[in-house]
Length: 365
Image 1 (cartoon, rainbow, N blue to C red):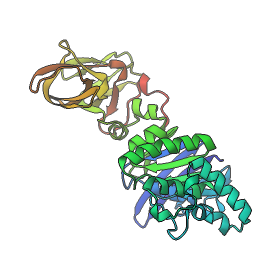
Image 2 (image 1 turned 30 degrees about the horizontal axis):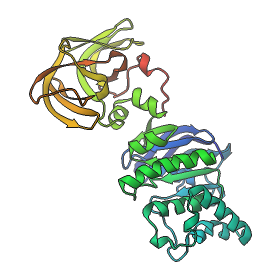
Image 3 (image 1 turned 60 degrees about the horizontal axis):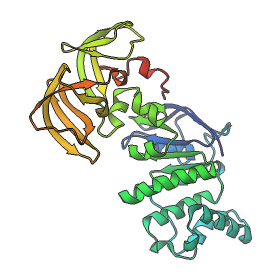
Image 4 (image 1 turned 60 degrees about the vertical axis):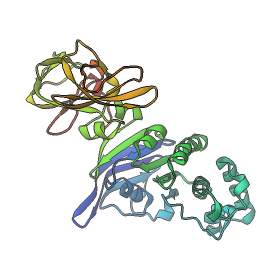
């Protein structure tokens, strides 16, 4: 497999810039997810790595070789599209072996490669069947098999599970990660679904407006978001944001939030007075009669072992993830206590995270 490196990659279409100066390295054997909303530039980036689009500026290196302007066929990568693009008049074996046939490989070797790939994907029993009669999950396996049979240096996948229903997507997430581990592939996986990215990826690049906002492990981007966008995009429900005016000094152990004192991780950099945003995940909130931040219960969503309780405060609506055994009544007044070591602070104007102990060591794109 291969290391992939992207350096200052940019792509413009007339006056519109789809990708703005992306920089990242994907180590050999890594499952790397590119996550973001529609139109953020993730698919354009993937297509440039694949050779299906040429960049306006920047470089793409595959195993140290500059392939920026190489043809897609010369890059030794495999691309799996959202829509399977299988040949309906061929059976499964012929679909999988078609790339090898185009390369002029001997029939005997093609049969061996197809059989080996089918075993990996657990579809040996389907080899003689026409693809038009297969389920969505089986057709996805055939599309993966057609990519795998060439034994490329890297796999590029553009929302390959988007056409499947929720149950199949959940199943295929486990299958794809298991397959990745078994073959040791370098994989780039594009998705707008955070659950797919968080459950499968070793590292995630979160994109917005053509820019890479943050790169890190699933735990890093969840626990230590680099900006307001990442904090809001990752998590269900997303992080709660409470805005206030304040200043920060290196020895501060708390911030003054509308008259209430809230403990925060140690401040590493001073900051003059200005608009700030306090961020807290729903699971890091509990009810407490002694808490200074108070509000009225607006509603509760039962989720089995937990419930999401929304509370209207004077500073906005807050969602708390609490045990389902906690009794709540609509309209009652409750106090909200925050886990101080898990709080985040952001600059309200730039959206950037203010460097505290919990944010140290986060990788940025």
